[in-house]
Length: 363
Image (cartoon, rainbow, N blue to C red):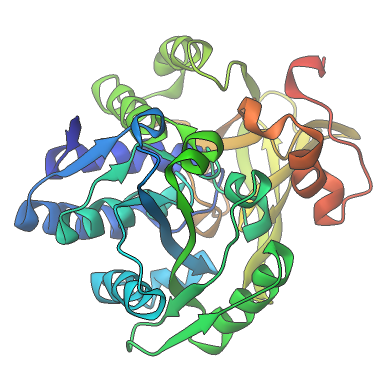
């Protein structure tokens, strides 16, 4: 079994911020928290989905809400481990392992340090292979895992137990609870047996995100220097395709918290041609990228943005006028290529009047 310790967290957070497609919460806050706790409790043990025994009971853990909130209301470990402990108490089930909701952003680290605190293994994988804003978009419910019972806990250790008919109703309920409880909550949910973990979890994403972060750190600086190695890394993964979509500066950005989400738009202007602009549509994450009248990438494919001079991934809540950026499109994993998955993750699921066109077939 592989382990991941405090010394790996900086790389993991950088790679997870890249895969977060603009969402997932602030990576720096998560980095500091995870480094402190893994230094205190020791490294977390990683187990690949394919190695999870049938008799294991695995619970998904992470934070739900508007990522902007975490810039002011700093999360602690208390609500995360509290939600997991309360889940065991409420359900009477012994948890054998923890799996992340998503690899994107801060939610990549929470299961790791809680696993270390509890002495449990953490699954090297997640339910998105990126960040997405809604619960029904996880691979877990798409492949048949029921999201509830779920335990939702806030920073004051207030908790709510949710029991919902399906993932769509769960999303409505947990989002409402997040709004009521301060804008961001921890949730333990999607309890499932080992065979369902093996089928539904996107494998190896914690290790892969750490590889991405290591690449960025060791080759630091201009994204142009890193780009060939980045393309090579993704080409060997289940994501497959990666494209450089745009380079320019942030011309305008607008976001507001609506219904527990960060919702907004951004406009970028090309360095080479002031009339060439990219429009981005945001719901926690970058969902659709358009250059002129042409859609160049959309969910469930990934739209990832980095600062041009530093290669640092740029979260939507940290986007500001004048920043110089490069935009990449990355193909989603095969888990999102099925009709069942596309039904809840294609652009129309977000209210856009357009069909999903895979990145690899867009000229």
